[in-house]
Length: 345
Image (cartoon, rainbow, N blue to C red; front, side, top):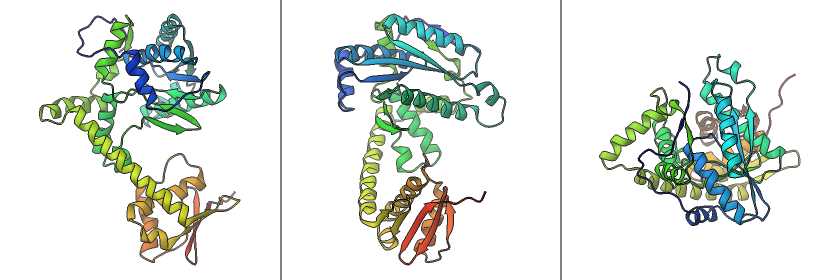
C-alpha cells in the first residue's frame, strides 16, 4: 500500500510542545557551540516533522544551522515521491534538505535475509557517512516515549539483559557522530498535536499499522497491558532503573580496566586474569567484551554465549588458546593477551 499525506485535522489527545519545553529537553543533552551544524533524520512522519519545526526554531535563536536528511531505501516505489515532498516541506521551513539513496535497496529486497534489518543498517550507515563527510556536529532523531516503551518490550521478549532493557539512550556516539534523541520523554500524541498546531501535514506509512511488524503487534499488546496497570509511564520508569544499573556496571568495568589492563603500541591488550576472576561475574564478562571490541574495532560486542564460553574457560582453569570476535586470545602466566587475529592469506 502506498503512503498517504495526512492533514492535521484529526482528533488528538496530545498537547503541542512549546519552544521552552523543547529548549529544556535540549539542555538535558549538554551544551552546543554557536555556529554548530546539526542534522535531523526526517522520514516525513509526524514525529520527525514536529522535530524539524521545534529544532529549527531552537537553532535559529542559538545561531546554529539545521539540515534534514531523508533516506530513500529504494524498497517502495512511493519513497522517491515522499522524499521530494519532505524536501518541499523543509524548504517552506527554511531548512536545507538532502535525500540519501540506498542504491542496493532494489537488489536486497529480493533476497531471503531480513530486508528490514538490512535497510535499518543501511540507513544509519548513509546518515553517519554524510555527517562525517559534511562536518556535521550531531545527528538528531525523533525517537519518542512510545518508541522507548516498545523497544523495552521488544527486547524483553528476546531475553535481553540490562543493556538491552535500558532501551534507547538519549545521547550516544557512533562512527564519531553524536546522536541526539531529545524526545524520548515525549508521547507521540504530543508530536501529532505539534504538527497540528503548526498546520504541518505529514506522511502516514501503512506499514506502521500492519500486523506483519513485531512492533505493531507489541503496540497492541501495550494497550492490553495498560488496562492491567502496566502503563507506558511505568515501563519508562523501568527503563530508567535499567539505565541506572547499566551506568553503575559500566563504571565498575571502567575501574577494573584501569587497574587490570594495559594496551601496547601495536594494540594488544594484556588483562590480569586474577582481577577479572575476583570481580563480579557481570563485570568480568563486560571487561572481556570491552577488550575484544577495542582490539578488533568491531562496532558490536561478541555474542554472549561465545563470551561466556571464554569466561568459563578462564574461571574453570580449563583454558586453551582460541579466537573470538576477530581476536586471538592467548594465556601467558597470569595475563590474558588479546590481539588482532592473524588470518591466513
